[in-house]
Every structure is written in structure tokens, then in C-alpha cells.
Image (tube, rainbow, N blue to C red; front, side, top):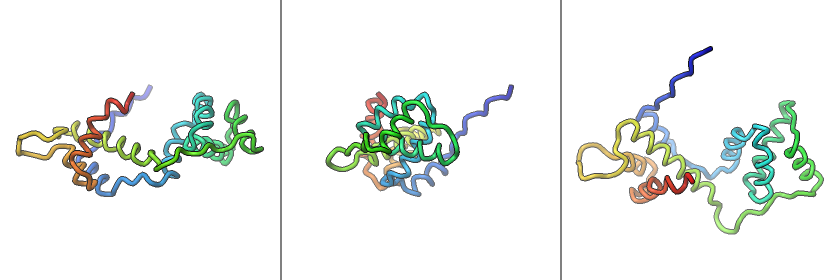
Length: 165
């Protein structure tokens, strides 16, 4: 029996480099590819099919899973197969999105900001501003690097508990 690998601890320089590279979540294709890779378990397919009926992003993920599995000679079965066949013959169609701007880029950005703030806190940074002059808080570092206001990053961090429910 092999030993489990210890978790990789990111260092501050790599986290700040990631922030400097920019967090742009406007490319839905990249988000679909990333999320679809986590839903490639047949046990998740019934829920995926239900969600694909009402959510255009979930529809896109389901299409990507079917396409990738077929491309690699893997089986598509059960509810996902029925869904794919219904879509192919036109019984099911891709749902329309809600009117207004797409909320996904902001949701993804906020999730990544919360993770990076937590990782910086794990490295010893205070999460928020205090009256102590030494060092910068994790929220300040993230706000500076992403060209966001401190208050915006603080709001994202403060909402982390409500977003995880």
C-alpha cells in the first residue's frame, strides 16, 4: 500500500504570480472544459441531465462530456445517452439563458479570490486590514494584484460562508 502524498503547499510568490497573470473568466469554453472534467463520473449523469434541461452551461458540459467520451471510444450510457439521442433528433433543445449579463464569470472570479485569500492566510497573512502597520493583509495583496478595490475583495471574502451553502 503506497503512502498518500502530502498536500502541496503553494508559496506566496506563486500565488502572487497567478494574480499578476490575471483572472479572466470571460471564456465560457474554458470554464465548461474545466467543470466537465469533474463531472465525467456516470454516477453524476442523472443530475447533470436534469440540470441541462434548465441551465445552458450544464447543457454545454453535458455535450462536452458526450463528445469527449465518444472521441476516446468510451461508453455513453443511461440517462446521458437518452439525453444525447433526444438532443440529436431535436426532442430536447439547449435552454435559453436568463436575460442580462452572464453571472458565471463573476461567480468564478469570486470563488478563485476566496481560495487565494485563504491560501495567503494559511501562509501567515492576516485576512483583513488592521491598524497594525507591518505587512499587508491578504485582502490588500489580492486587491492590488487584480486592480480591484479593497472593499470589493473584502465583500467577496465576507460572503464566502453564504456562497458555500
